Image (cartoon, rainbow, N blue to C red; front, top):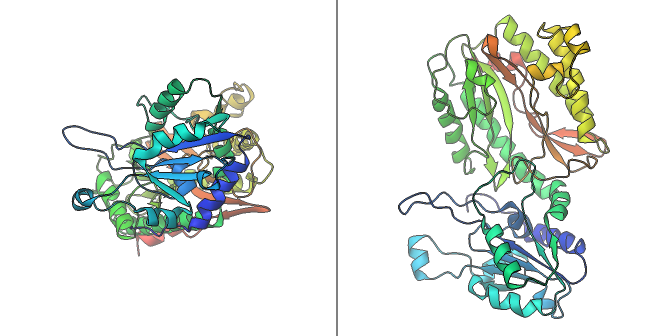
Length: 429
């Protein structure tokens, strides 16, 4: 395994917290992701479902977790089903987890092969009064492909139509959003690797390099430090491309005088980091570029101070909008008249800052969490304001990941160069 695994005790605690939130008589099921085909005999790299990983730490396909806290036999209260390894699999793919290894990594006492799942489920449903099934109600989810979870849910509810169905996702949204000390350590490792990639890139950027060469420099540094690569598709946009919020082609030459926006983050052990930095291709910001950069930096730092326990995210985003309005007025990008006559549903600042400022981050870069409940200590958010001036071919976004504490926050990326002067100094060292 290329990353340091977290201790089984963490997953024991996670499952305990989930089961304590279940109704009496409930039986919960969680499925690993499919390995998705491409064409011919090709497949995409396997990526584990975040929920089953959070509950077990198992990073392997064909895995099922069954939780039944009220089972009459204590051995049936937690069961992990995993693919049965054999000599042929070991030769072609490498050996899968043995039952003993699965037990050690998860803290689950009963390990069965995945082939036994259906008969074990049938046996235990005789005792159960409801089924807890998982789904993906994330606000940004838009997936036309049927997942294994959706496919299994459909088959189970068709076979057992008389069982009431409860939803696991609302429980997990609350539990997964509050990060443990072990998870924070893993996320900090991802942030540290991201820092190394960024410092490498600062020494590489100059007029004439391409966006994809910069992407390659990040990837090289991430992989050599134990990451499996980017936590999400990287955005490396120079000049006008920095004004395209989800620009991922990364295909253009970086020209003298332009600024490059780099929204990148390493993953480590399935945990994400999410950083954005902007650097001048020529090694020095122009006065205008620096003014816009410092405006964004001011909003970023003030926004961090607003993210505290008890705050509602909707109120926070409204306050950030006021901070951004002030900066855009100072830059001459909007007028007091435009602010006075603005549409409350689309304020004047949205012309140049059209996205949200923060989102949950963890096992998913856009992690789960309850947006309409107060912020809690243990939540981790990005803070990423931006100003995009298409008519000037200039886009500036800055982003760090912060951990909410009881009395403030800890910036997990405080050690990554951020000030314009520091960026220039490192590029010209």
